[in-house]
Length: 310
Image 1 (cartoon, helix red, strand yellow):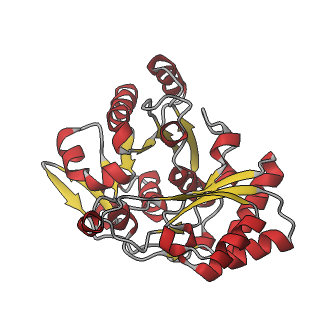
Image 2 (cartoon, helix red, strand yellow):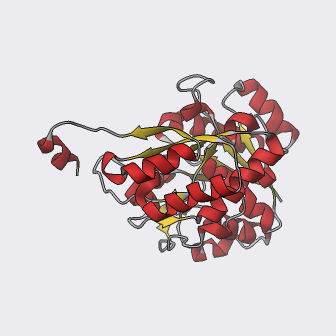
């Protein structure tokens, strides 16, 4: 059973990495599906015309289509699902991602081209879904936690899946991207994620509802091993750590920096943080270990506005 994990966006243009690059989450889901023995691949259709996409789908129609949906690509995602359904009406179309997680009822109620929505992080949920579909046990999909799906004229929402705690056991996306469609690996693999969740609960942010309210971390050893595997395989020496707040765990950051220096992993990197989550020792260690930029979110200079935002 062939599985295609796809992304399509045009907002910002092909040069905008925040809209044109493949979401990191699809890489993790692809690696987990491959690890479980499924035949899957990823595709970034952001630089393709709809005619080119149709030709690619016509040549190899997937049995399962997984689509990553953000707010900026919500219309392109639905158009992609509709196109694939026209080519292969029996294809099972699954949406996931921040927008789909928050708007699953509207999506399933209004768009028959979407069969199910994965809620929150998707590795285990998608794998179990694929296992059942491959075994032709579609009537048992209600047993998959973290899933919303259409049942006749109603929407079935299964119990939420507990957040995954053992992030170190996830396979690295880099191991399964050689056959990816439309993915510029040298740009794509620059972006890595080393934790899930954020210690803050700002009212404007989707992170708490998507990842849960706890913060889960990968170990410094796992992060360095992933960086080295990407560097050794593709020659990358610049990385962007896209955690909501990379420096939440101070000791983890210091150990990560120590390993980079000890093992002479000569790279440059950047990260995101908050002004109250760093200190001089941490910033000095990060600088020595190759960090050349820290992006700080500054929502407002007004205490009243900050309280309103949470």
